[in-house]
Length: 270
Ligand SMILES: Nc1ncnc2c1ncn2[C@@H]1O[C@H](COP(=O)(O)OP(=O)(O)OP(=O)(O)O)[C@@H](O)[C@H]1O
Ligand SMILES: [Mg+2]
Image (cartoon, rainbow, N blue to C red; front, side):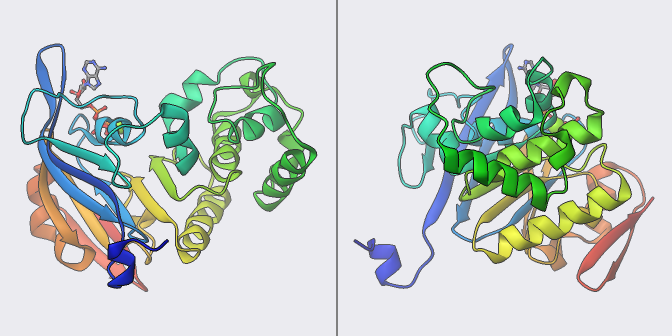
């Protein structure tokens, strides 16, 4: 049954945070953060090293729990306050450096991709792998041009090869939200280009992209909203054209930054 929001034509709120704080070792690493992400919205998150980008991603993926001591704190995903971690992750396709580290062991490329169906790190005896899952995994690998990696152990892959396998894992179960924390690190030029084109296709299919990047060139034209993080707080949040200004980025990084834009893509010179 359509929700009230759908009936009135408004977009469904996928992620809602209000006054969300995350602490580690007595330190606030996210400080009273408030934001909403609606269905179909694509977002880029930019900020200096240590500003809280990965921590924000880890809240969304259920790896970090917000502090519950603030009475006006709200954290809902698709309207729900509590989630089983596997149900939550089945909604998400995740690519991050931390995930790559988790996988540094003797497991083949095909098994890594298949593990995306189970939101697990690897394949276990209780996983029922159906023939259509294997077929889909091979299809995704073919599409990403990583079929030759299917039998190779991830521990023996180059960093860029392993990254591409993880991208396959993130896409294989057709997630609603693609959560990407510096996904293009270590990719060569062609793979980087393919990856951008791929995120464009995912966006065109009505999925949400939440992208953390240090490279403005990764902000594909379909990403219309940009959030700038500084010291665990939202410094700016709004339309890409307004947010990606020389003034904002120079202030954010503390050095003069020049911005150029071309065909819907932005580049920073510093
Ligand atoms: N588990 C943790 N324990 C202690 N401190 C943490 C933990 N996770 C994050 N932090 C701290 O929180 C701050 C934000 O870290 P985070 O990884 O979110 O930064 P980031 O914006 O992703 O940076 P980068 O661009 O370097 O990836 C850092 O100072 C980091 O040391
Ligand atoms: Mg990070």
